[in-house]
Image 1 (cartoon, chains in turn cyan, blue):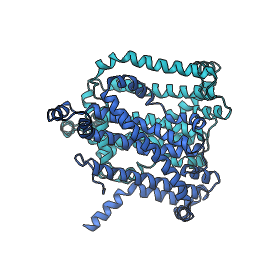
Image 2 (image 1 turned 120 degrees about the horizontal axis):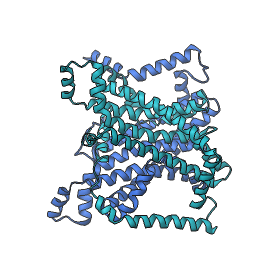
Image 3 (image 1 turned 180 degrees about the vertical axis):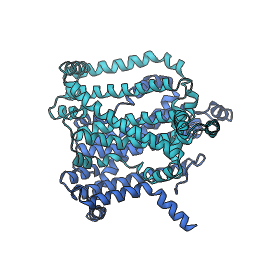
Image 4 (image 1 turned 30 degrees about the vertical axis):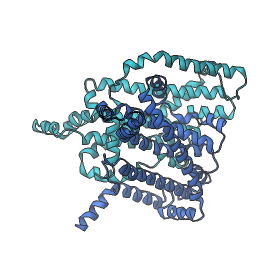
Length: 280
Length: 258
């Protein structure tokens, strides 16, 4: 199939490296205290500089940021924005990842489906999908619908391509064996193709989650009336720098938790398969 | 033979063709206001009009310049940073946690702060693009250089290579496919981030053009901007594939003409 080849090789190579066991774990430990001292010193320097009053007002002390996060969380304001953002991202991811994965798997095993989607992927994969955001906002309003739609569009591509290559990489011997033992096409799909493509599907999901946050917060910054991206621009317009950093910290925590969570799920789902995961 | 090829070409174009047909059908049916969903011919003429009066070129050149400067800065700083992290354990200990913790954090959230530091113009956008591109480039260079087979390094050392020669002539070419993988992830990101940042706050650039046209209810003009973005994104990706084909000639997996 044309068009996909470069992207596939990129993912193969990337996936192969990402799960490579780290060779220098021992030497990393030796320098850990240097690292801790360096970053602790930097934060302290930041704190002192911000408190000295010599820095511009947008440099806010880390302690003040922490206090603001706690305050916003305590009076419940933070939760309304967090939940608004999380609902959009969850719905968008659910639709985008499910459709991208299923259609990608189908394209990987079915020639006509593969041909049908070839033009869409090879023509529009390198195109920044967010360009259509203002139009979506005009069509669907600035509420949840336009944000969910743009997340679905952004997330479809990485999940499709990963699922496609996952399905392409199923071993012929496994398929033949299942067929010989009389498995129905449906059973083969769910019991052979899906599990063997799972490492790739999860790689696609990891990209999708990161991308969905970028798109969501940007969309909320452009136009919304709730959500963490909105909170940042609201704080910016009111020159509440402490609030701006507080929402930034919340966004960082959500991004980190989502990524680590998926990594934990991946580790559990692929128990004993890391070797397979490394060479999709 | 030619007939078969033609049929296959139509088959391959299936999805895009059916989307275009669906668009035209909905636009003609009158179910949606023609203002919201202009016909394809109208988008085409709006695109040509914007090309002819120089709007597309004017705004496009701003977007392209910002994306490319930020992206190139990320390459110039990210590749050596990744290489140093891979070679010097002290550097690795200090910077590896920074990258692994802040990698999943959407850097776009920093944009309002960058505006205060670098102003509303190109500066803040270039810095944002730089930050967003730095991660994939640095991390891929880091893993690439770290993954260079020891046998290659030993063989070169046995033949008398050392220092810069060993680094530039052995380690960098061996890691080049990885480094390029990072670059290929970063380039579309650069473009996405520039468009987004221009939509959030700017008075020039394609992102601004699209949201301005859309805000003034000229959706054909807005779609013309989207077409321009699509053409630029696609062309940049093809250029990158071509570059890779000629630069990393020993590991080709894709023909540039496809």
